[in-house]
Length: 129
Image 1 (tube, rainbow, N blue to C red):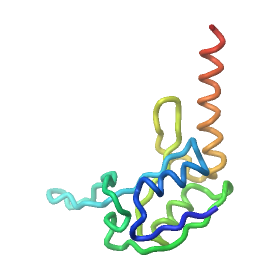
Image 2: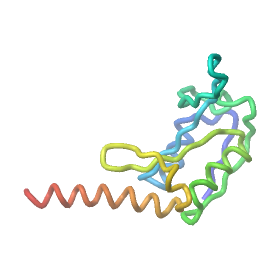
Image 3: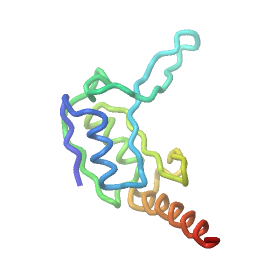
């Protein structure tokens, strides 16, 4: 699997391509902004249009991955290969949960976990119909 990323690639296009492979995972990109009072960097979800607008370090490239790729490795590849701060979230019912604590797990495993929650909720609700 691969994601080819160019300077005119939109955030929406990238997220849709990723979701095509893993429907129960969500890719988010972040901008870093310096907080002037505490001199710490704050992460803010990127809501712009083109990926080149997300980072002064952005570079075009291709990210290669598979269901066996750990989430931490994919996020690191975005940083190294494209200069983008990426984060993967997993579907859990109606919410998206942060995968930081489980980033050692693979994309396939995390996607299956998200799908299992949806399936379990469906089975629980239909049990009483």
